[in-house]
Length: 508
Image 1 (spheres, rainbow, N blue to C red):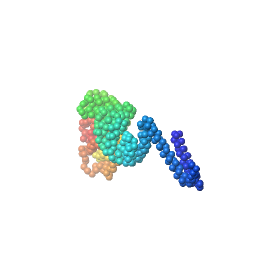
Image 2 (image 1 turned 90 degrees about the vertical axis):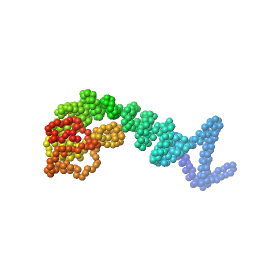
Image 3 (image 1 turned 60 degrees about the vertical axis):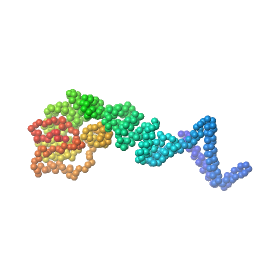
Image 4 (image 1 turned 60 degrees about the horizontal axis):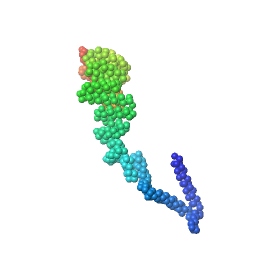
């Protein structure tokens, strides 16, 4: 710091002295008189300035020749690299200057200029580990992928730059959509630098996409080991991977292994709804109903969900509607004010044909949260209480244009999924699906759609009575369907009034 300040001050003093001297010479009339060997020389102002510049140049040349003479003497005395070091210093200065200009050009977005400066720096420095990196990034910037790949392959051959080369090739393959090659390169990069977080995340995402759940769990453990992941997040994501691994085992037909894997996944993260449902079904298959009840109650306490209600119904599949309503109190008494609890009670009372109690259970959801499922249940209640076809059709018409309610939504890209998955089908993000209400669609409804309930309800006096079979809510597609526990929770209705009430299985 002091040395830099001293050089700045010295430079300012020299410039000031030269300025004052030049001004003095220009104002003087006689100039400068020099006497040498009895001969007197008189220099005018302009001649004096030129003479000063020549003197400075002569001193600079003298110093250069003097340092070259010193290097020559060292070489004569046995220092074989003295002269080469003398010339290399100048080359290094030019090389690092070109390298600096190349980095500045790269940061400024001037790809072609950066490649030219990198080539010049390589000519002087002979350090490809520095210049090749600038060349590769500049080539990518200009769209010359072939050139970039060629340079990255050169970097792979050097031990000092192997990781940079592998990572560059990996990103190129990802951009090109070649995920199989990218996965192999990510594994190689991870082996070189297991602590690199970007490589860890890329490898984990590719392994999850390729359903390599075992490898993904090892990568996740490495992230925890190297401090790149909090322990609670690791526990949750490891449970997601364990659940996905259990699904894979189930698809292969290994029932016992799938049951054990599902139970292990649920123990790792009890609030993971798909894991709880699968673990409960595993216990049911093994005849251990009390363990299934314990798991489902714990998960329901964390977050009520239709899949949990459906699994709870499978514990006693042949019970009557009244018995089922009584048994489900183990769940409905835990979170009585939750939206899902109210809907479940309404569905159970519909199955038991207690329509007034179903209306009380539904509460004011039709006004505060009027989604498709709520309005369909309201229509079923109206039908059960003997309302006219026009009233029922009015509720069902509202349901057609209402929001679909909570669904599995990707937190990253907001894509709606029909069922839970460890990886988003659209953006391929890992563990981003959550049970929530998606944002309202910006799609414009057809003109007059908001009048549909009134129009449908007003045809009662202008047409013949409509059969019950005609008042059925169309079955939504897999994309739009809201998962519900109605089908499994309600059961079959074997009553004489079945023709007067809509089938609960049709209510979505």
